[in-house]
Length: 336
Image (tube, rainbow, N blue to C red; front, side):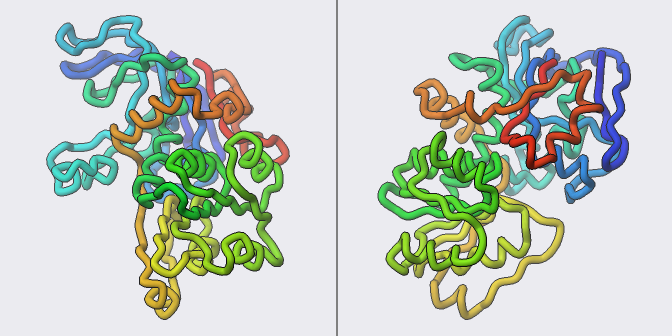
């Protein structure tokens, strides 16, 4: 089977590997679609903090069941999506239902080889039927679920003001679900094309270009009170530190992005707001179900989000262009 390996940062190689044989309790999935995530781009550029090379990237996947145990509830040919966060089920986080931050988590495409391949064995608990949605939509569940989880972590409520800092795929996903929860959503980013997308396709209330006067504009939009909940989806430490200033008194600050280093806040600014600081990592089965329901209801602009496509065989030669802002990539989908 064709497999694309990231040997070192910036180096992708296609190789032929044998089709894996599933063990008892595993499902052999014939991979059909793989979404390219910011995590994959960070792996390619060498800035993913949890990774060792070589690695087969890809964790946003959908496919068809090739083989499964007779008592699995799955049959050959079933369309499925995969929850790529392989949790242990018994640690302190898992016992609380927080499988997304399992102590022993193994994320496909990060801690173990992922879906840039034609066949993949996955433990049965993490394979789910993709009922009522397309394979394209199923491959987009994961990044959208991260946004749904962030909005849930931020406890966004109807009528509240929410700010999303960063209009990449995760920021846009967060904006989608903050809006679906009834918030008035503002997005700030340095790319005008992303802001235009957020207005036209996501339906946010306002967009603010990053740069001189942006804080004054955010203040104007909120009558000087700023935002009940602020989400950072930039992966930029300076932005993460600055974002606290946009949190209203009594508000919440949710860090969806991650950087390989320390971030610092002004303690007086944090305390005078009595702010709540939250991390938001991955997603849970509940969040995947939330996204599926929204997709079935036609509430997700998934066709607009899927801006680029390439075949698995073309990944080694074509992957680098996905990093080019001039390409206008929001979500690229690899077809197997």
